[in-house]
Image 1: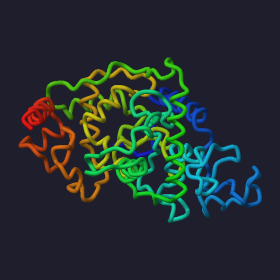
Image 2 (image 1 turned 180 degrees about the horizontal axis):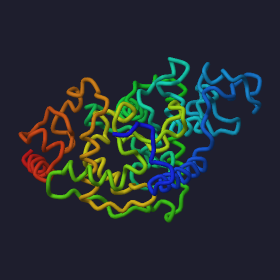
Image 3 (image 1 turned 60 degrees about the vertical axis):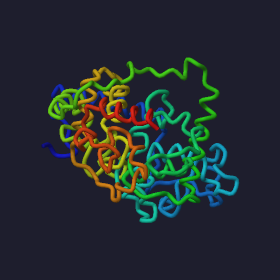
Length: 357
């Protein structure tokens, strides 16, 4: 096990490759997200001196949410504060750890327990067509959620991510952060409608197809060490963006205290494998179905934060995904099979069950 923030030795082949990856990722991050918002630097305060574009005091961002620039898009709600904008929402997605993370100087703003960004999984702040993009998210709500057992809206879905993928707590429904993220997602829907057919096409390999067997954790370890560790670290704890943990990660941790908790969707093997097959390694998604399947199982077998009261999820246990890694279940398949497969027998069971109703 290496030191959690130490990379390969300088001058080694791994170090050279990692340096190239880091430089490329920084360039992509700057191009897509713009410069991060500093928690200790200057920011804009609506209605205060400098609101027209002149930076205010260095403590401004600790007193209230860091607002967008004066040219930011429309408000989430007409009665919302003038910094609950699409641009602020985009920055929250790109720099979640910095703006809402456990290191924020204002305890009231510490809404997530990890140091992940929403953009750690929703690549390009959700604007890249393909797996886990956010371009059409808004139009799918309101919708029924099997996990909640009721109808949910976009704000409910945002808070599911906050509590699970970000290992945090729900945003207040009337908070500028909630309004801003919802506004950003609404704006992405408008952006998608304006996109041409060629721009909507995802540049991804063929979709993941689950092998007809149980995932092999030991094989997944081998895949991780050969294909994933160069960016995410041999210990899986990621690579910090800077020496300051409050700024989050350049390459996110895949397990450990700063990663998603066991109630997150990414903690399901099939969900993780679909994402890995489509997107990883970053910029070169060349893993086979077997490799993606096994490495997803390995990653989800590692220690991570635990979410309380998961037994309350899915009031109808039959609505659980076949790879849900915690019970209770509406079938007699063992927990280990729900965690690792093979999943085809479970799928066939529920298909037959629906036919008899």
